[in-house]
Length: 267
Ligand SMILES: [Zn+2]
Ligand SMILES: [Zn+2]
Ligand SMILES: [Zn+2]
Image 1: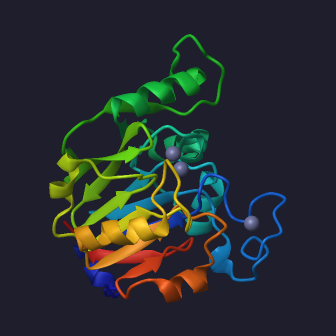
Image 2 (image 1 turned 90 degrees about the vertical axis):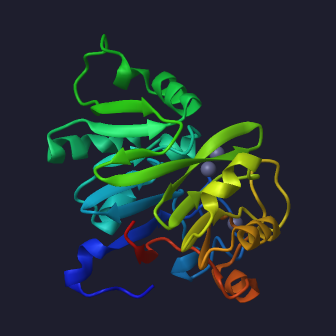
Protein backbone atom coordinates (compact mmCIF):
# COMPACT_ATOMS: atom_id res chain seq x y z
CA UNK A 1 0.00 0.00 0.00
CA UNK A 2 2.77 2.45 -0.95
CA UNK A 3 2.10 5.81 -2.55
CA UNK A 4 2.18 5.57 -6.31
CA UNK A 5 3.88 8.18 -8.51
CA UNK A 6 1.93 11.23 -9.61
CA UNK A 7 0.99 9.65 -12.91
CA UNK A 8 -0.91 6.94 -11.10
CA UNK A 9 -3.16 9.43 -9.34
CA UNK A 10 -6.36 8.01 -10.75
CA UNK A 11 -5.39 4.37 -10.31
CA UNK A 12 -5.39 4.47 -6.54
CA UNK A 13 -8.12 5.33 -4.10
CA UNK A 14 -6.87 7.35 -1.15
CA UNK A 15 -8.52 7.08 2.26
CA UNK A 16 -7.62 9.69 4.85
CA UNK A 17 -8.52 9.44 8.52
CA UNK A 18 -9.55 13.02 9.30
CA UNK A 19 -10.39 12.17 12.89
CA UNK A 20 -10.29 8.96 14.93
CA UNK A 21 -11.72 9.95 18.32
CA UNK A 22 -14.84 8.91 20.09
CA UNK A 23 -17.50 11.55 20.71
CA UNK A 24 -15.54 13.49 23.36
CA UNK A 25 -12.40 13.91 21.29
CA UNK A 26 -9.02 13.16 22.88
CA UNK A 27 -7.83 14.92 25.02
CA UNK A 28 -11.12 15.14 26.88
CA UNK A 29 -11.89 18.55 28.34
CA UNK A 30 -10.73 18.62 31.97
CA UNK A 31 -9.06 15.18 31.94
CA UNK A 32 -5.48 14.81 33.16
CA UNK A 33 -4.97 11.12 32.38
CA UNK A 34 -1.78 9.91 30.66
CA UNK A 35 -3.29 9.81 27.18
CA UNK A 36 -5.05 13.17 27.48
CA UNK A 37 -1.81 14.82 28.61
CA UNK A 38 0.43 12.80 26.26
CA UNK A 39 3.02 14.61 24.13
CA UNK A 40 2.49 12.09 21.31
CA UNK A 41 0.53 13.85 18.53
CA UNK A 42 -0.99 10.45 17.65
CA UNK A 43 -2.90 10.61 20.94
CA UNK A 44 -4.49 13.87 19.85
CA UNK A 45 -7.71 12.79 18.16
CA UNK A 46 -10.50 14.84 16.62
CA UNK A 47 -14.00 13.51 16.12
CA UNK A 48 -14.44 10.54 13.79
CA UNK A 49 -14.49 11.16 10.03
CA UNK A 50 -12.76 10.05 6.84
CA UNK A 51 -12.18 11.31 3.31
CA UNK A 52 -12.18 9.02 0.30
CA UNK A 53 -10.56 10.25 -2.91
CA UNK A 54 -11.41 8.18 -5.96
CA UNK A 55 -11.71 8.93 -9.67
CA UNK A 56 -11.13 12.63 -9.03
CA UNK A 57 -13.98 12.86 -6.49
CA UNK A 58 -13.69 13.71 -2.80
CA UNK A 59 -16.23 11.86 -0.68
CA UNK A 60 -16.53 12.73 2.99
CA UNK A 61 -17.80 10.20 5.52
CA UNK A 62 -19.70 12.14 8.22
CA UNK A 63 -19.52 15.85 9.03
CA UNK A 64 -17.81 15.61 12.40
CA UNK A 65 -17.95 18.30 15.06
CA UNK A 66 -14.34 19.11 14.07
CA UNK A 67 -14.93 19.34 10.30
CA UNK A 68 -13.69 22.93 9.90
CA UNK A 69 -10.41 22.17 11.65
CA UNK A 70 -10.00 18.87 9.78
CA UNK A 71 -10.65 20.46 6.38
CA UNK A 72 -8.10 23.21 7.04
CA UNK A 73 -5.51 20.78 8.41
CA UNK A 74 -5.96 18.32 5.56
CA UNK A 75 -6.29 20.99 2.85
CA UNK A 76 -9.66 19.78 1.58
CA UNK A 77 -10.40 22.33 -1.13
CA UNK A 78 -13.22 20.40 -2.73
CA UNK A 79 -15.96 18.05 -1.51
CA UNK A 80 -18.30 16.25 -3.87
CA UNK A 81 -20.55 14.19 -1.58
CA UNK A 82 -21.16 13.20 2.04
CA UNK A 83 -21.98 9.71 3.29
CA UNK A 84 -23.63 9.73 6.71
CA UNK A 85 -23.13 6.70 8.93
CA UNK A 86 -25.72 7.88 11.46
CA UNK A 87 -27.04 11.03 13.09
CA UNK A 88 -25.23 11.22 16.45
CA UNK A 89 -23.82 14.66 17.22
CA UNK A 90 -20.15 13.72 16.81
CA UNK A 91 -20.86 12.58 13.22
CA UNK A 92 -23.13 15.42 12.13
CA UNK A 93 -22.46 18.66 14.00
CA UNK A 94 -19.98 19.98 11.44
CA UNK A 95 -22.78 20.07 8.84
CA UNK A 96 -22.77 23.87 8.57
CA UNK A 97 -19.15 23.80 7.35
CA UNK A 98 -20.43 22.30 4.08
CA UNK A 99 -21.49 25.85 3.18
CA UNK A 100 -18.00 26.76 1.97
CA UNK A 101 -18.08 23.83 -0.46
CA UNK A 102 -21.30 25.23 -1.88
CA UNK A 103 -19.36 28.42 -2.62
CA UNK A 104 -16.53 26.42 -4.21
CA UNK A 105 -18.73 23.98 -6.18
CA UNK A 106 -21.49 26.52 -6.93
CA UNK A 107 -23.88 23.62 -6.37
CA UNK A 108 -25.70 21.74 -3.62
CA UNK A 109 -23.76 18.92 -1.93
CA UNK A 110 -25.40 15.49 -2.24
CA UNK A 111 -25.65 13.69 1.12
CA UNK A 112 -26.60 10.04 1.62
CA UNK A 113 -27.72 7.94 4.57
CA UNK A 114 -30.32 5.51 5.82
CA UNK A 115 -33.90 6.59 6.58
CA UNK A 116 -33.23 7.19 10.26
CA UNK A 117 -30.09 9.25 9.66
CA UNK A 118 -31.73 11.42 7.01
CA UNK A 119 -34.90 12.00 9.08
CA UNK A 120 -32.89 12.84 12.22
CA UNK A 121 -30.63 15.22 10.30
CA UNK A 122 -33.70 16.99 8.87
CA UNK A 123 -35.15 17.38 12.36
CA UNK A 124 -31.91 18.36 14.10
CA UNK A 125 -31.02 21.01 11.51
CA UNK A 126 -34.49 22.21 10.62
CA UNK A 127 -33.21 25.65 9.62
CA UNK A 128 -31.26 24.09 6.76
CA UNK A 129 -34.06 22.06 5.23
CA UNK A 130 -37.14 24.16 5.98
CA UNK A 131 -37.86 26.28 2.91
CA UNK A 132 -39.69 28.77 5.16
CA UNK A 133 -36.45 29.53 6.98
CA UNK A 134 -34.99 32.17 4.74
CA UNK A 135 -32.19 33.44 6.98
CA UNK A 136 -28.96 33.79 4.99
CA UNK A 137 -25.97 31.53 5.22
CA UNK A 138 -27.30 28.03 5.32
CA UNK A 139 -25.74 25.10 3.49
CA UNK A 140 -27.38 23.83 0.32
CA UNK A 141 -27.63 20.07 0.62
CA UNK A 142 -29.65 17.35 -1.04
CA UNK A 143 -30.50 14.45 1.26
CA UNK A 144 -31.02 11.03 -0.30
CA UNK A 145 -32.05 7.87 1.50
CA UNK A 146 -30.15 4.87 0.19
CA UNK A 147 -30.47 1.22 1.09
CA UNK A 148 -28.45 -0.63 -1.54
CA UNK A 149 -25.40 -0.16 -3.73
CA UNK A 150 -25.52 3.12 -5.64
CA UNK A 151 -23.33 4.98 -8.07
CA UNK A 152 -21.76 8.36 -7.43
CA UNK A 153 -19.69 9.78 -10.27
CA UNK A 154 -18.76 6.31 -11.49
CA UNK A 155 -17.89 5.12 -7.97
CA UNK A 156 -19.90 2.20 -6.61
CA UNK A 157 -20.83 2.76 -2.98
CA UNK A 158 -22.33 -0.04 -0.92
CA UNK A 159 -24.06 0.71 2.40
CA UNK A 160 -23.25 -1.99 4.96
CA UNK A 161 -25.62 -2.23 7.92
CA UNK A 162 -24.02 -2.51 11.36
CA UNK A 163 -25.49 -2.48 14.86
CA UNK A 164 -24.88 0.53 17.11
CA UNK A 165 -26.57 -0.55 20.37
CA UNK A 166 -30.25 -0.80 19.35
CA UNK A 167 -29.81 1.28 16.19
CA UNK A 168 -28.96 -0.18 12.81
CA UNK A 169 -26.64 2.29 11.12
CA UNK A 170 -24.54 2.35 7.95
CA UNK A 171 -20.97 1.56 7.27
CA UNK A 172 -19.86 1.97 3.66
CA UNK A 173 -17.87 -0.16 1.27
CA UNK A 174 -16.13 1.46 -1.68
CA UNK A 175 -14.07 -0.96 -3.75
CA UNK A 176 -11.66 -2.82 -1.47
CA UNK A 177 -12.26 -0.48 1.50
CA UNK A 178 -14.97 -0.66 4.16
CA UNK A 179 -15.53 1.93 6.87
CA UNK A 180 -17.50 0.71 9.89
CA UNK A 181 -17.66 3.19 12.75
CA UNK A 182 -19.80 3.15 15.91
CA UNK A 183 -20.21 -0.57 15.42
CA UNK A 184 -21.38 -2.84 18.25
CA UNK A 185 -21.93 -5.87 16.03
CA UNK A 186 -22.34 -7.07 12.45
CA UNK A 187 -25.77 -8.35 11.35
CA UNK A 188 -25.90 -11.69 9.52
CA UNK A 189 -26.76 -10.01 6.21
CA UNK A 190 -23.68 -7.78 6.19
CA UNK A 191 -20.82 -10.31 6.28
CA UNK A 192 -21.07 -11.08 2.56
CA UNK A 193 -20.60 -7.41 1.74
CA UNK A 194 -17.29 -7.43 3.62
CA UNK A 195 -15.59 -10.22 1.68
CA UNK A 196 -12.24 -9.71 -0.04
CA UNK A 197 -11.32 -6.37 1.53
CA UNK A 198 -7.92 -4.70 1.21
CA UNK A 199 -8.70 -2.26 3.99
CA UNK A 200 -11.14 -2.41 6.90
CA UNK A 201 -11.58 0.65 9.10
CA UNK A 202 -13.51 -0.35 12.20
CA UNK A 203 -14.27 1.27 15.55
CA UNK A 204 -12.68 0.16 18.83
CA UNK A 205 -13.66 2.39 21.72
CA UNK A 206 -11.63 1.09 24.67
CA UNK A 207 -10.50 -2.12 26.41
CA UNK A 208 -13.65 -2.59 28.49
CA UNK A 209 -16.96 -3.63 26.87
CA UNK A 210 -19.48 -0.92 25.96
CA UNK A 211 -23.10 -1.44 24.87
CA UNK A 212 -22.84 0.73 21.74
CA UNK A 213 -19.27 0.10 20.56
CA UNK A 214 -16.92 -2.79 19.96
CA UNK A 215 -14.07 -2.90 22.45
CA UNK A 216 -10.53 -3.62 21.24
CA UNK A 217 -10.80 -7.39 21.68
CA UNK A 218 -14.13 -7.53 19.84
CA UNK A 219 -12.83 -5.34 17.01
CA UNK A 220 -9.77 -7.60 16.61
CA UNK A 221 -12.03 -10.66 16.61
CA UNK A 222 -14.36 -9.09 14.02
CA UNK A 223 -11.40 -8.10 11.85
CA UNK A 224 -10.16 -11.69 12.08
CA UNK A 225 -13.47 -12.96 10.70
CA UNK A 226 -13.52 -10.41 7.87
CA UNK A 227 -9.81 -11.00 7.17
CA UNK A 228 -8.82 -7.87 5.20
CA UNK A 229 -5.19 -7.20 4.23
CA UNK A 230 -5.07 -4.29 6.67
CA UNK A 231 -7.35 -3.22 9.53
CA UNK A 232 -7.31 0.27 11.02
CA UNK A 233 -8.98 0.92 14.38
CA UNK A 234 -10.84 4.20 14.83
CA UNK A 235 -13.34 6.01 17.14
CA UNK A 236 -10.94 5.55 20.05
CA UNK A 237 -11.31 6.93 23.54
CA UNK A 238 -8.71 8.19 26.00
CA UNK A 239 -8.04 4.72 27.44
CA UNK A 240 -6.16 3.86 24.28
CA UNK A 241 -2.58 5.06 24.02
CA UNK A 242 -1.36 4.90 20.42
CA UNK A 243 2.02 3.30 21.13
CA UNK A 244 0.80 0.85 23.75
CA UNK A 245 -2.08 -0.28 21.56
CA UNK A 246 0.18 -0.56 18.48
CA UNK A 247 2.38 -3.00 20.37
CA UNK A 248 -0.55 -5.16 21.44
CA UNK A 249 -2.25 -5.66 18.07
CA UNK A 250 -1.68 -8.44 15.51
CA UNK A 251 0.54 -7.44 12.59
CA UNK A 252 -2.28 -6.70 10.16
CA UNK A 253 -4.12 -4.36 12.58
CA UNK A 254 -3.02 -0.81 13.43
CA UNK A 255 -4.59 2.04 15.37
CA UNK A 256 -5.57 5.09 13.34
CA UNK A 257 -4.17 8.55 13.93
CA UNK A 258 -5.48 11.85 12.67
CA UNK A 259 -4.13 12.55 9.19
CA UNK A 260 -3.31 8.89 8.42
CA UNK A 261 -3.54 8.13 4.70
CA UNK A 262 -3.92 4.70 3.16
CA UNK A 263 -3.97 3.91 -0.54
CA UNK A 264 -5.83 0.97 -2.02
CA UNK A 265 -6.36 0.03 -5.67
CA UNK A 266 -9.13 2.14 -7.22
CA UNK A 267 -12.35 0.19 -7.69
ZN1 LIG B 1 -19.57 8.28 17.28
ZN1 LIG C 1 -8.16 11.33 29.66
ZN1 LIG D 1 -22.86 7.00 17.47
